[in-house]
Amino acid sequence: MREGAVPPLSGRREKRVAERFEVELSRRDNSLTRERTFTENTSPGGTRVLTTRPWQPQDQVIVYFLQGGFPVRRAEVVYCEHLGDRFAIGLEWVVQRPQRGKPL
Image (cartoon, rainbow, N blue to C red):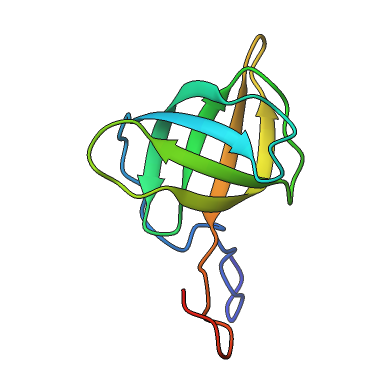
């Protein structure tokens, strides 16, 4: 790298941990039936999940954790990677912000 050059960013803001949790995925608009699957890794900002169907970036997803006592989470698809007979999707957690005059 030449002097003064800025190193490329890795694209990762948080360290991911390889953790396998059983989850169910559904579209936020309930247009598809729930799919039972597993996470590959997680971070405070999101997770990578294996799935049998392709998803599009910006799809809104509801993630139901089936163990561990975790709350239901809303997420947005960041990427969808084709892995032969499966897909891996990157999900970013959607943080609910309170609206004026409405409880969370």
